[in-house]
Amino acid sequence: MTSRKPDEQLARNSRLRLVPARPLTTARRAVTEGRGRPAPRPPQGTPPQAELARQARAVLADAVRLARWAAVDRDPGAGPLTAGARERAAAALELTPDQVSAAWDRARLAGLVELHDGTVRPGWRLQAWDRDDSAVQRGWVALFDAWSLVHPGPADIAPATVAEVIEAVPQVLSLLQLSAGPVLEPTLLDLLQQRVAELHEERCEVPYGPQPAPAPTSTEPGPADPVDEALLPPLLDWALDGLAAVGALTRGEGQATLTPLGSWAVWVKLEQICVAAQSPAGNIEQSAEHMLRGCARLTPGPARAEYRAWLAARTVGSAVTELLTVARGEDALLRGLAFEALRVVGAPAEADVRAAATDTSLRPYALLWLAEYEGADPEDAAEVLTREESTWLWVDTAAAVADHGESDLLVRHLESAVQGNVPTLLAEVRALGHPRTVQVLVALAAAHPDPALAKAVRRAAFQVHTGGS
Image 1 (cartoon, rainbow, N blue to C red):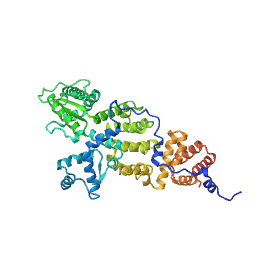
Image 2: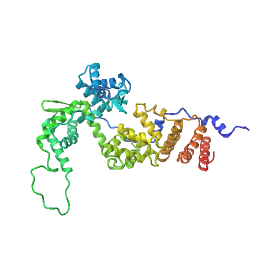
Image 3: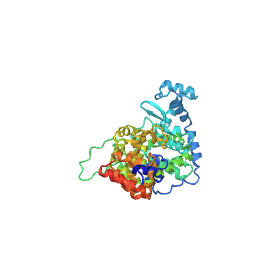
Image 4: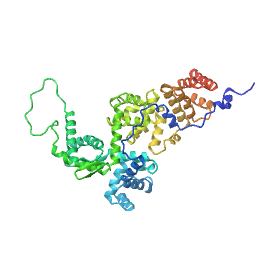
């Protein structure tokens, strides 16, 4: 016989001790890492990742130098580059003021620097620049996506016409990518004309029913009139120059050729479109909830491509609001996925995520999002959470696994708790007040193969259910 209390006996039982905790981010993603399609391979002849990253580093070399000067070498807490700061940067980096201005724009567009409350900080890509080739490639793709901002459109052409050409450029890039070599600019111009005409027709509404008598003929073009084709050659010239400026293509002797970096980027974009088109829920046209459910069984890479496609079809404000509304719902899996989608949004979501941190159910997710946004390594971000917040997230993630995962995932999730042994975990979970505590404990007890542990977990579930201690 022994006089020890049951919880003391449990704590001394080595079978009930937890192994060293895994990062919470690993447990948080466990349920989303289900089966997905195999990673597609780039076209034959595409350089390896290290070479593509080398080319991207070359394109952004001045932007990286300026970003480090502006966010690291200057006085900490300094703001955006003023005229005086640009002059100092030009002297320090041996660049002209115009080169400094161009490099600053590129650094911001590529995510090398970020502005927080008027203070310049190094972006996470800058911190990973020398050691993470994938971060370098993503930074360059962000610049590639913003080519029309790097090289603003002609001031003497209507913005609506310029916008139609920008919308038609992906078709031009697709032809260049499929050709895998030089393409004559007259061929590109023909394609541009066809695509702009198609876009124009798609925006024309066909009236139905009886129509009023036609108005007197006007000599001024209306909104449905075709774009002046005389404007398209200079606009094609402008677009090709803009794409060449970011390192996506080269020009010469009346023809254009994608660089290896540009060809790879266009292939990536085409793959993203294919993934979105094949999504189980038709993600682009669906609500945030249906989109997230469609992404639940994708691996992280394809899921991020889905999030980007869905976000691109909406205004940022409405998309963030819709994602946070889903996060406040009862489905813990969708809550985690909503914040994964918000990571793709980035800076425009910061204010809303900070506001969400006041909501008990969203606070751990919001704090992790903010920590990663401000430059923390995802594996270390959990350090910003208190023990209570970590436990809340553990229960919430367990609820997601119990609802959508498999029993072995739930058993493995036990290892990610911050507590050192099962009795301490159960005591803190009982005191937490999470609405899903009973269901989580019952599911864990049913899934765990260890009889002693399962019995302890069932007793804790009963105590929470009955209000006992």
